Length: 108
Ligand SMILES: [Zn+2]
Image (cartoon, rainbow, N blue to C red; front, side, top):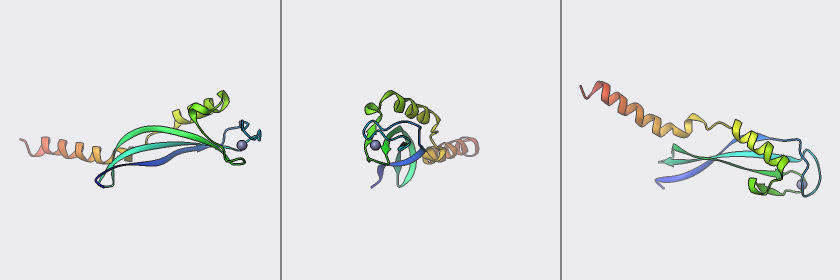
């Protein structure tokens, strides 16, 4: 496959919230994932961040639309702090460097 999309885990946290399903506390794991587009397996462009929570006790998985306010708050805070890594743009950066190199050293 020439083009494709891959996902990488950006940030993981265990917020101090109660699971709405099994009512246990401190069992929730929040994960922020970053999607990136790749070209010949080289990461090229970020496709944004998303995430979900999972209860380690009852295994309930919630998307951010399904979370209650406490969990949603923790989710958005974690998402805000999850930075898109520079290597998501490795291909794009390489091309930019090549173009700049060409402009400076070859075109004149
Ligand atoms: Zn649970």
